[in-house]
Length: 284
Length: 332
Image 1 (cartoon, helix red, strand yellow):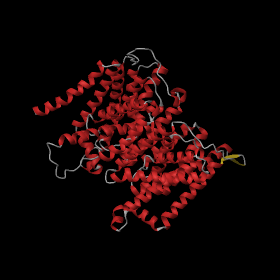
Image 2 (cartoon, chains in turn red, yellow; image 1 turned 90 degrees about the vertical axis):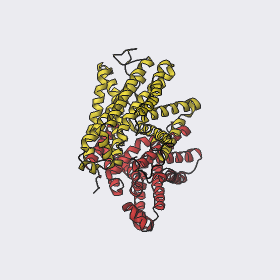
Image 3 (cartoon, helix red, strand yellow; image 1 turned 180 degrees about the horizontal axis):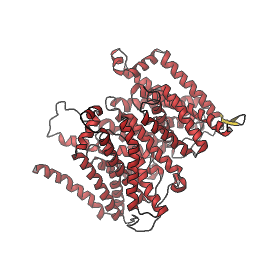
Image 4 (cartoon, chains in turn green, orange; image 1 turned 120 degrees about the vertical axis):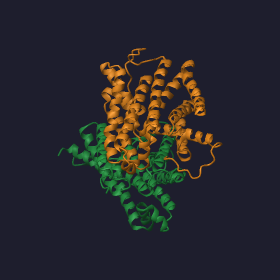
């Protein structure tokens, strides 16, 4: 096999890890609360700025800045849930989606207002590994590893803890669980916190690889939605698999075509598949 | 009957006056008016689908096709926009039907419909960027200018362009009225309420959905074409993609998507708000307008999902009609 193709495949795999992490949080929120956060990628963007400012401007150690950014994303997510989602939990789901779209505009424009449209990066150059002629970005490798750890952590939380069980139960049957004495509202708040915390984690990993600017959410937000829908909205395992399918299409497509063409390919694949199987690849 | 006609006159006379006023005002106001007319058309087109719970987050796709196709034809082959625009509308409709047909067949609704259309908008954006050899990519492009020419639909005289935009806007309202008065509204409302029930009652769900999709996408492409001809500058982010698609949705909702004039009021509201904030804050605060805009949208959707028109209707209706006893809320 062509060594550059192999490199593309490996890089696609690594990209898939981050996409998987992004889709986990969104899927969790959708599965439990039945809301699509159109502004999910903007929460990530905000957390990326948090890392950037704390690290470069205030001189915090990177790990501490990342931890603070995760807390920041969590608080932001809680605000989104409590201020925007909760008042309209009873109305049509599409209204909730649109309301978070308003949040998208708000965060994006606020970032423009505060920071301008400059592209900013941490200025950290992580080494590039060479393995038998294949070049692998170290930051991507770290991102992949942490994404996997995050996914496993979420899985253990959902399957092994009492609260996690309650979260899964709500996702399965909203009404009955209320009757069984589970406080839905509390579970919703918890879910939003975890989901946005994962967005914060993803932000820490993305900021190592990409410049941050107010509109970065628009570049990988749509890909995240695509991954979630492809896996079956709310289906976390499906989303996980879909993340790797999409990232491979983009990476391998990018090897043969210009990168936009590769992304077009991924979106077209998505549209076609969703029109054949609206329930997603793992849906019933 | 006579009373009804009188109140209607009372409503339409000021409207006609407002629509005619820019002809007598300065360039600046004509510029505002052209933008309001064009975007009103686009928002009206979106609301034609949105009001029946076909919430598209991908109308930027049709806007982009409408903007780029006539310009590309003009620049590369010298085809007049009078031919290019209908062609672009036909292409947009074809694109809408290619996605609309299977998604109606597979009953892709709600979140899924929103996200599939969002992907469609992104596809058009990326295609425009990828074809940078002819479209200029992210940098945008300009139609070859020939000065004042009706043949090229290049009208530096704002009043003339306003007349064109006004006709297009009226076309949107006519389409709305046709839908409002026809069987198609009843059919689509029943589909929005319960698709299976509508189908079993004999509604041709697929056909009705595709009809409204075609009208909506075609008119959106017309709006995109006019906007490009007016600005004489096209860029992928301004004409396509998620950002503009969401802007369309929100302006339509802010105005009120269940009323013929709602989207128009949404256009006037958002454009005047943006302009007002620009005058107020200056260009130092790029984003100030949109920040307030975003916050307002959240407030609109939470507190007044029927938009400005819905609020006005409620206030106007209050003195005459006592609170209806548990009247079923219309679909929102």
